[in-house]
Length: 236
Image 1 (cartoon, rainbow, N blue to C red):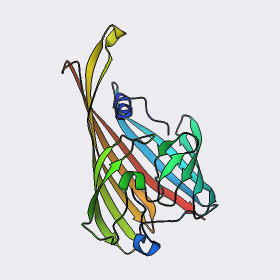
Image 2: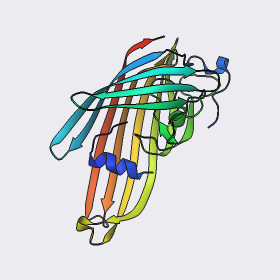
Image 3: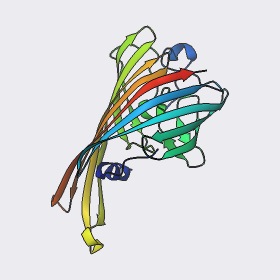
Image 4: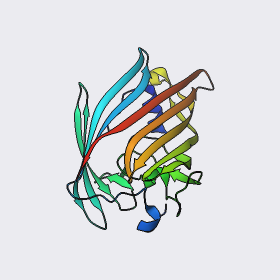
């Protein structure tokens, strides 16, 4: 995915489970992809630059090219309003883990249950259910440890929330002018709230915050990035 070229995303890029069970257990949070299926989402990324707060708007289209019991192939097209367009192919596993084909990098699953981000759902989906998961770094988001909670369940709609922490990362980076290397300490935290209906993402909202100190507190930053997505259309 294309990302805004901000300090926050540069720092996030530095921050370098089990199957979901039977179909009866997974309802209503798992949706099985079908060949020919299409999802369209609107996305707004809000971030700060030296010039102030910026909003990057885009449209994400996901087309299922192939699907069977073992895997699915999804074509992702992202169109930035007033900007570029990118197309990438994704391999989707039945348990909800998506990856970019040929790159071995984790892809964000914005359409169905994302096992990379949220792990396995409990056998019984009920409000208040909690669990933890080790989250791998994806093409867009940082890695870390997250606590996941079922916030609400009503008929076919399920809302979950995840609170994550990358932990503290320390490394040495070039100073201004690359004359010497100085210590950099980075820590990222995030909160994600997602609502599913029949296992399909209706709304996705993520707030990410990155704290950093460079050269033993000589320079400090506190950057925020917000990603909001909404389902525009879904067809089979």
